[in-house]
Amino acid sequence: MIEGKTIMRSFIPYALVPCLSIFGPVQADAGEFDGSSPLLCALNEAMECSPGALCQRILPSEVGAPDFFLIDVAAKSVQGLGGRGRASAIRGVTMIDEKLMLQGAEDGLEGVRDGLGWSAAITQDSGRFVLSASGEGVAFVVFGACAALVNLQVLPD
Image (cartoon, rainbow, N blue to C red; front, side, top):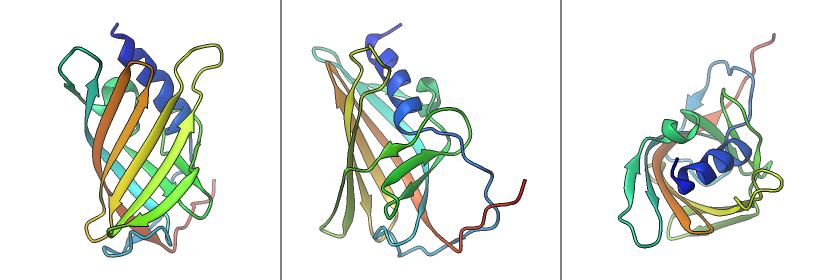
C-alpha cells in the first residue's frame, strides 16, 4: 500500500468522518457560505502528492472519506455523515476575498506519525471548496461543494 494512502486513511477517519444521526428536511440558501449556518458538503475528487512523484488522482472513497460531511463554524467542528470516525476541530476561521477559510490539525492514530494540517477555502458565492491536507512526505488536495443549511432538524430515533 502506498504510504500516503495509509496516512490519509488514518487522517480522514479521525479528522473528517465521525458518525452522525440521519438528518431530516433541510433547505439550502445558495449565497450563505459565510459560516453563519452549518454547511453540508460533498467531496468530488482528490489528488495525492508525494515528493519526487507526480500527483495522482484518487477518489475520496479510496481513502475512506465520507460522501458528505457537515461543517459547523459556530461549533468549530467538521463531522462526517455516516461511516466511522471522529470530529475534526476547526482551529482557525478567516474570511478573505469572499472565501471562508478554515484551518485545523489532527494527530491521527496514537503512536503513528500520521499527523496532518488542513486548510479549506469555501467560495462564498458558489459554495465550491478546495481542501488541502499535508503531513510528513504527503499532501492531498480535495475538491467539492457545499450547501448552507437552514432550520436543520434531526429526526427522532
